[in-house]
Length: 261
Image (cartoon, rainbow, N blue to C red):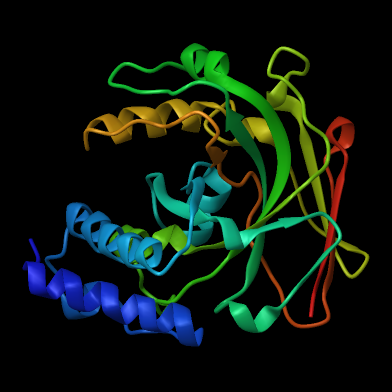
């Protein structure tokens, strides 16, 4: 376990990297014995620093929920982070690439809760009952820790590599559509880069919402009504640079477009 002073120092390093859009050395290279609990403690201190600066929490992201993402990162279990109000974009947005480090895009569904959701025995059915609607989303990854050799400890401490999300315009209740079969066809500059279906996320994209509620219960917390839950990617991440145009077709759930400037 890391000492409280180490946790504070690492959270401060990540806050500075977030401010300057920089990258810091791997935490696990400097602290080989750091645990997952340590990494969530670092994330928690960083989160509280951001809230104290005036940012507003609007939801949570779940990461590493699909085989595609686990294979792409070499990390074999899900993680989660927080999302703030100033990281939410709408389809058609121009996104400043200089705001992020190691910029990549993932294809996901997001869920907005209509009622609170808590563990310890939350099921997929419980999660579906608590969800108001699903909306297609792109996640912008933003990694402030060097990528080579990183572990889940590094990723969690870095707010699960969350940078921003781009939300679509189509909302669907869970009883209106079989969410498992929502497709994603991701194109960059007119060329298809990745395809997948939402069932790639733990068999059903809302399974991660139940997982998160149970995980939160371990920390004495719950998911609240109105929160946005970004459920995890069902494609591998695609690198982005300035000038790239992105289009993702979600079939019955519409299209998201954005451009990096």
